[in-house]
Image (cartoon, rainbow, N blue to C red):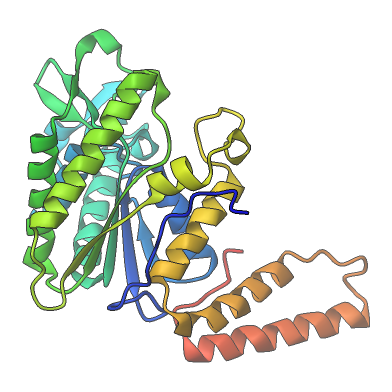
Length: 324
C-alpha cells in the first residue's frame, strides 16, 4: 500500500556535486536550509551574502551589483531606529555604524563576484512574487527594515516580469561563468501574511515563470539550468502539519532533512557518499560529551578522532572542523 504520492526525481547525469564542487546559494530562507546541510557535511559553499532575499527582483539586483562590481556609497544607505540600513539587503547586515555597513556591503559584493565566477553550481531559491516599492524613490526593496507600511506600495510581480528577471539573472551569471549549473527552486515556506489565496497565487507565478524560462532556454556547452521541486516535495509528499514548525509555516528539521535527502539523491555524486558518512561520523563524535574527560578511554577516543580528521583533510584540504 502506497501512503504517499511520490515525485519522480532522476539523478542529474552531468556536473553532479562532489567535494571538489563549489556551491553558491542565493535567495529565500530555504537556501539557508540546504546551505546548512552542505555546511554540515563540509562541502564548499557560500550562502546568501546579502542575507535572505525573498523575491526575484532582489536576487537580480544582488547578481547585477556583484557582476558589475558596484561600490556602495552613503547615498545607498539610510538611518532608521538607531541603525543604518540598505534597501538591497536583509536587516542582518544593518549596523549602528554607517561606515561599518558600507564596508560590509562592498566586501560582500566582492565576495559574491568571486563566487559567481568560481562556483560550479548556483542554487537560486525564489520565495514570493509579492514585492514592496518604497514610494519615496519608487525602488523595489529587498527588505522594509521596519519602516511603516504606509511608506510602501505592495505589488504582485507578473509572470512576464519574473521571466524577464530570471532571464537577466542567467545572462549576468553567464557573463562571468559559462559552465556553472544553475538550479532554480521555489521555497516551501508559505507567506501567509500575504493571505492564503495570495500566497498560492504568488507561488504559481514563480513556478510558471521558472518553467517558462527553462523551457525556452537552450544550454550551451556545459551550461545546465534546471528546476528542483522543493515546494512540490513539501506540498505533495509531506502533506501533514507534523512536518512544520510550531508556526505552521516553516518546514521543521525533519522536513528539511527529507528534502535534503531528495536533493542529495538527485544532485550529489555517489562518489561523495562515503565522505559524507565520514564527515557525519566526525561531526557526531565532536558533539560527544564524556563522563570523564581525563579518562584513558576518552583520550584514546580523541586520538582516534584526530586521526580520522587528518586522514580526511589529506584528501580534501578545504575541510575544517574548527568552528564546531
